[in-house]
Length: 509
Image (cartoon, rainbow, N blue to C red; front, top):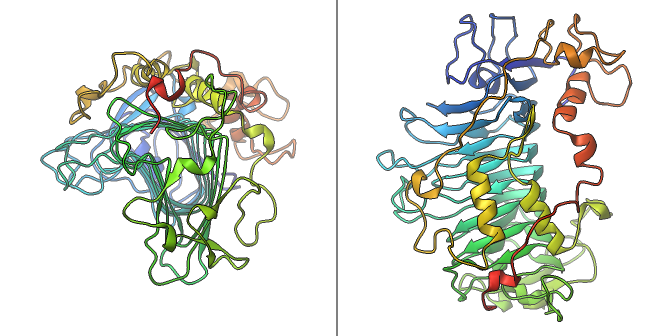
C-alpha cells in the first residue's frame, strides 16, 4: 500500500457509525477515508491502514464503498477476529466489503465477510465481497461466505485471491431475485489475476468461473489467470467455467483438486467448461493444464492413484459452447480457428498473454495436488489474529467436512441452505485482550517499537522506512503480526492432516 501521506485508523468500535468527534473510530470511517477528530486527529481522503483494537461482529447497516485508493484492511491486528455481517437496516442490500471505481490498491487480510439471508429485501447484489472495476487488489486469508448473489465477485485487474475460503451461499429463497441462486465464486471480467490456495465449496454453479478480459470489450482484448493449488468441492451442476465473453482467455490450471460432493450431477459438469459467448470479436483460448486432480482426471502418485488421465478430460463443452466455435489464439491474441475444441488445451507451455514473457509465479509457490489440499485445509481462511491462531467455529466445520468427505455424514446432502442457521451460523468470537499501549497512535504498539532502533514509541513514524527495504514501519509491523516471516518461507508445502480418498470416495464422472 505504501504511501508517504498514509494515515492509521485504530478501530476501537464495532459500531457501523461515522461521527467525527464521538471518540469512536469505526470501519466505516476508515473505508470511506473520513475525518476523525477524537480520540486523535485523522485527516480525510488519505491512503490508510485500518487496524482493529476490537474483536467481534461489525454489522453493516448500509454500503461502505471503497472509492478512495490505497487501503490496507488488517484483520490480523484484531485480538480475536473480525466478522462482517448484514444488518437489518441495510436496504437495498449490497455487498459488505466493496471496492469500486477509484478504490484501487487494496489489501484485505484475515477478516470474515458473511452476508446472510434477506428474504424481504430482494436484491441482485448480495455479495459478501466484491471488487468492482478496480485494480491492484490482494485478498488474503479471508473467509467469504453466505452471499446471496456471490460470496466473492472479483472484477479486477492485477489482483490476487489467495488462501481464502469461499462459499457456501444462501441459496434458496434467501433474497435474490431468483428463488434458487446458488453461485459462489465469479471472476468477471478480470485480467492478470492469480487464484491460489483457496477453498471454493458447496454450490450449484460457479465453483471457479472465469470471464477474462475487460469491459467495455474491444477487438484485441485478452486476459490471463493463473489458477493453482485450489480445492473446489461439491458443485452440483458447474464446478468451473472459462469464458471468452470479454476477451481471449489465457489460463494456467496447475495442481488443483476438484472433488465430488453428495449431490453432484455428471452432465455438463466440468472443472473447466468452455463458455464461448463471443459473437462479435475474434476471441480465443490458450489453456495450459497440468496435474489437476478432478472428478474426471486422476494423476498418478496422488490420492492413491496408479494411472494418469489426459488433463483435457477435466474440460468440456456444455450447451453454451461446442468444439467448433471454441478456437485457439494467434500471436496477436485474437482467435485462430485452425485450432478448435480440445486443441486449445495443452500441457507443454505456460499460457502467457501478449506482452508477458515469463511466468507470473515462482516454482516454489506450487506443490503437488495432494499437498495443495493439505495446505488449504490447514491454512485457508481467516485463521490468524493478533494473539495467535484463531480459526473460528464456522470455518472449522467446513474444513472438517472436506477432510471427511469420503464418509457420512455430509453437509448439505439433502439440499443447500436458505438461512445462516442451516449453514453453521455465525462465528463465535471472543476477544483475547484489549488495545495495546500505543503512545503516539501510529498503529504500532509501544512494546513492539521499543525492540528496534528504527522505530520510536513516542514519535509518529508509521510511514518511515529507515532500513530502506521498501516496507514502511507500519507494514513491517503488520507483516510481523501476520507471521509473514514464517508463513511465506517454507509455509507452502507444510500443511499436515488427513485428506480424503480420491474424489471423496465417489465414482468418476
